Amino acid sequence: MTLFDDNTFKDDINKKDMKNILKEENLIKLINVKNDDLLKLMNLANSSRENNEITYSKNVFIPLTEICRNTCGYCVFKKEDTDKNAIILKEKNEIINELKISEKYGCKEAMLAFGEQADENTIVKNKLNTLGYSNIIDYTYDVCEEIINKTNLLPHTNCGILSYEEMKKLKEVNVSMGMMLENSSPRLMETIAHKDSPGKDPTIRLEVIKNAGKLKIPYTTGILIGIGETKEEIIKSLLDIKKINDKYGHIQEIIIQNFKPKDGIAMENYKEPSLIDMIRTVAVSKLIFPNVSIQVPPNLNLHTNQIFLFSGCDDWGGVSPVSHDYVNPEAEWPKIEELKILTNDAGFKLNERLAIYDKYINNEFLDEKIKNKALSLKKELN
Ligand code: SF4
Image (cartoon, rainbow, N blue to C red; front, side):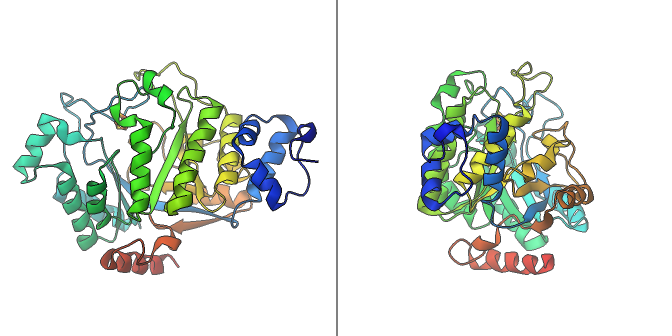
């Protein structure tokens, strides 16, 4: 009997069966399962996890700028430069002061997340020039260097698409970097989600993820669920990431993020994905990536978090005791203590991690100075 004979699962899945399961056509069947087969899928995904630990990184979110050249249909992060409350460019001393406060809360990750190619904007450019910089990458480099030298935090930069040379430069001062793939379907470039966002071209984004691999950058990526994609496109996106990771082995985590409707966005009347759709996607992701952490943002699923722990989720991602989630400002972070209780309650163990997973803290992935800093912070966790 094969896995899909009479549409049920076998009790014993061997290696050959797993190879069969991971074929695209079978993954598409799996991401559509219902009834008892859904429970079997969850069970299979959960048995693929490496251990019983669920991790998180205590972080602080630093939006270097809220200006972005794209306009995604689901975004509230981006601000117009005419908005008097917009962050045009955070200055270094302001950042370091914020990080000094976050140190007191035990944060170890400074997540610099900001709009893509913001220095195309004249106001941002002028401000950079005033500070003595000609572009935002050089500025980001210096900010990261100060973070390394002056604080107890490790920089992780996520600012959309970057060239190979830009990533090569930023690698020197980041323990890890990231960029959501969102979805690898070019079709979405014609839809409300991405029609005004040239940077969301999946061909370019897959190239960025590949370049990160060539450069040996520990990398975070992920997919956004509920932006008009099909189940087939979800599977294709995960397999596209897998293909790159199979070659370079640099993907440390895959975020499965659910779209949340918000007032005032172009997609405000779109529905968020169902809980079952999220469960199926998380479970299938774990089957595809048994050795990569599958992350589900806990603030976006406050009342349903525990179910993901039974579907192959192994990481809660960055959780901040000091800053809010600028991407989903309506969604408060759970307190670490609450996260611990809900994780333990489900039978798992909550462990703090750094912005870089342990297996990447070595000379292959990090320069000497930042490696030593990561090692010494890791000791603080143990
Ligand atoms: S989602 Fe990211 S890329 Fe899209 S508009 Fe917002 S900040 Fe820019």
